[in-house]
Amino acid sequence: MFMGQTNYKSEDDFALERLQDILLREDRSELDELRSILYEKEKLSKKVSPIIREHLEFLKENFSSEYESIINELIDKKLKQSEQELLDAIYPSLGKMISKYVTLQMSTLKESIENSVKSKFSFGRSMKSFFTGVKESELIIKDAVVSTIEEVYVIQRDSGLLIANASNKNSMDQDVVAGMLTAIKSFVEDAFNKDSQDLEMIEYGSYKIIIQSYYSFYIAIAVSGAVSASERGGLAIRLDAFADTQMKQFKGKIDSSGEELSILLGEAFIDS
Amino acid sequence: MTISKKVILTGSFGVGKTSLFNQFIHQKFSDKYLTTIGVKVNKKSLKVNDEEISLLVWDIAGEVTQDKVPTSYFLGASGVVYVIDLSRPLTFEGIKTDIEYLKKLLPGGIVKVVGNKKDLLTEDEIEEARAQIKLPIDIVTSAKTGENVTALFTNLAEELL
Image 1 (cartoon, each protein chain N blue to C red):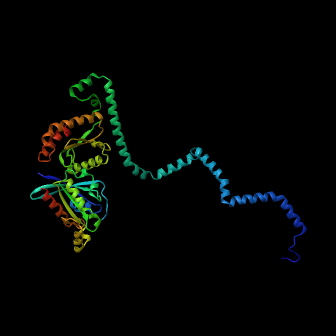
Image 2: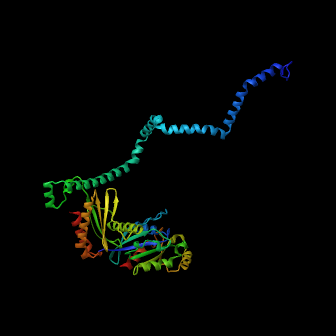
Image 3: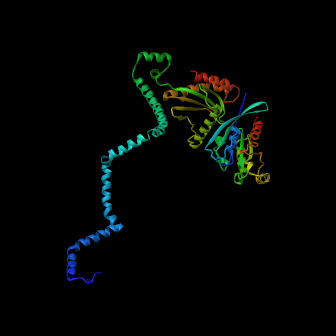
């Protein structure tokens, strides 16, 4: 403290303070109020929440127009950076999806052609169909859409043991295939047992295993490509005919006659 | 001509059915425990008494009691291999009921009781387990070391012929 100074306020200081008090009272009280809002979470939240909510509402309605270009830019950048990884991830699924879609579309196409052919007359085609016994619709799309019988199995119904089989390719052990098919069939029929119904088809991508059950055996046919409902119906008739003519003498037994039966099976379904 | 026979591998879970199956079919053993979902079928051909026999082995997912296994899996089976884990008494608590059930389900079928995981026990402990089990064990095996695995299936094949 300097010499001559005292702790007492002069009259001037006092007057100045009073003046300040009068002039700034309102501002000071507002400042205090603002401080209390700023430092008390609850009060601050009460004030800020409606603003945030309002902004969020605004964003909800205007997000795309406001940020579209920035997001697009970011996505483009990210996609370019990880193009290879992305392709690796989606490529296998994409192939399967395309194959499945094409098969489905082909089946639909076959059905629709069949329906339209029913209502349109073509003398030449009708004659050919008449003499060959092949449906007109099948003649039209014969070369475009081909379904192929790949394998045929005659399997003992209860045990799943293979009675006979014919195939146009070297697949895995046929006895194991017959066993696994029976296991799947038994599982499905046990799990979803509804009025003793049989599993009739297993679908895997563009590959179908059509199953026709008889009393002591069942026949499983593996077909690749699109199979229309009428083709399936035709196949069922051929299977019934085969069961009726050939299987009766074999009586569903597993013996040396299985080889003979396999030849007949091949002639009836694979080579035809 | 090869004779084909269906054989079921069954028992409680974790007793080593799949390990016996893999040891018999592929001569392989893995310490990793992977529970079987549904059924796995595989084939092994054996020559017994100058005759070729194909065993179609159905490795079935383990169930605590046999009446929980879908009966359709047993249809047409000529033999059943009922596996227990000698080191876990819980796996042979219901053995009597299970074997009775299987014999009723497959009249004329051959049922073999197999005590597996021999490698985990001493001779004394195996004898102790035998005393606890209410039925005679046909063969004691180790899927891990392969001990008696081929013998089990060869004996079964001989009886099936």
